[in-house]
Image (cartoon, rainbow, N blue to C red):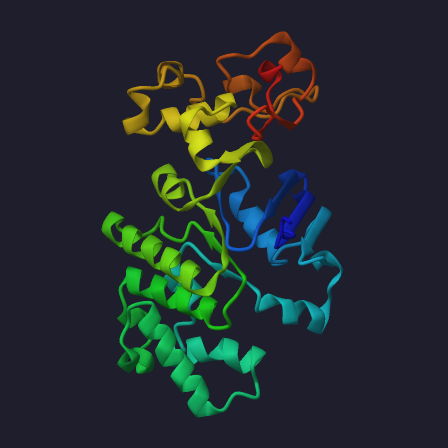
Length: 315
């Protein structure tokens, strides 16, 4: 019997004034799964992450967490759920309060969600979590500015893990770090995932990192899902022209990918606005565009191998 999904996202839409940042996005995350989310800057990745955690308003759709409608929760009921859904932001220094010591930063989630815990018990939990992310317990009296970027990201992960969430959203959590540090942080996240059994929503523009950590991958373009597939299937044979272009842009892949030639010769050199008549949003950048792509946007459909993709050519 298949276990019910941890999180179900149905028809999610996020708007900022006249701009639609996330448009009709649907997917599920299973317990312990890692779903990678990729797409270029402006594709709606961060807006999606913040909407899932109710950090920004949702214009339409459903967020179902273990059978509960997250969008219906208010006040104390919503705050009680936040311990189960945590986020690690891109800039670790910007996400840590510079006026608080590391010990206070890590103890704060326990004070909020486990107020009955005594001071000594909180201190022990903080020290254990620091050890889990590879930092010394003696560092609790220091302030964020006394740590490197990689150490600050470890602290941000430790804070997010203090209450052992079931879903951790990583929003470009390694993109601001040196390559060698990126590997350390990614390995740390995978180790903690195995230890605590949590699910990961891993957002990144670094396809190599996403390939390393993900079970499935969701591809966003201008706020819409254009493809979603198992990791190996997507990298082996991307179905959507935009996914093909993303993979072609990676040097080690481009050498063997025929899409690279079209892409590097000017296709996709600049972002194109969606067509006014409601056609395919990728129309102005697609090397395979046809007349029907102008008339109507392609629907997201299930292909024979189980993946989802939105392209008229898949007929």
